[in-house]
Image 1: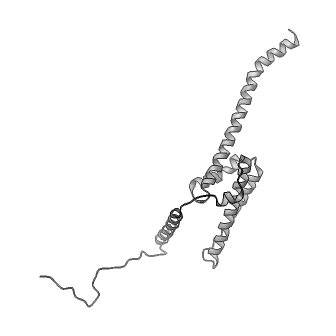
Image 2: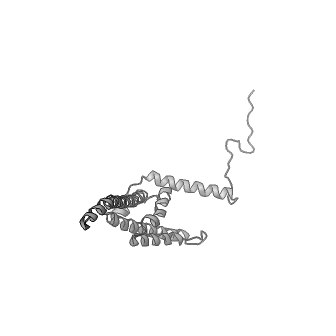
Image 3: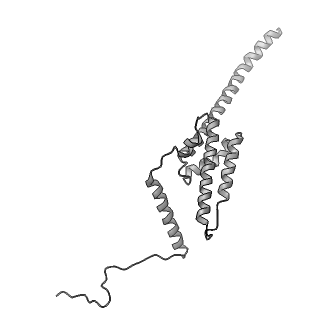
Length: 182
């Protein structure tokens, strides 16, 4: 057998193996891009409701699926750092102001994160669209506020820091006698 015959035999043996490896590489690439798109879509869909479980879960997946994308990872680290430094002392005079400042900064950092993700995924979004181009009904916002008030009230009640308000109505005032019917 000549060298060219051996090369044909080797090619016949290696070609299917190489084809399978290339196919696996392409599938892995598409799967990774699909996971990134899914995270991005969830974060875009829930950007006005940052307390939703799917939003939090998607944020926590960034380290796994965007680990090679340094700009995204750095934007996520900045946002995470801001979350870690939210004001804790609820008795502080300017607690509400500090919370509002931290919340506004979180929205800005989330916008930056989503912008970096959009670039990597090939979307042509600008920061204004990301920040303001979403819809949330006013009723959803009111429901969240009401639920937060209820949770806080029940927490205070169960901790013994508040009492359940009770008022009696329908009784005649003292001094008035109820007329008896015969």
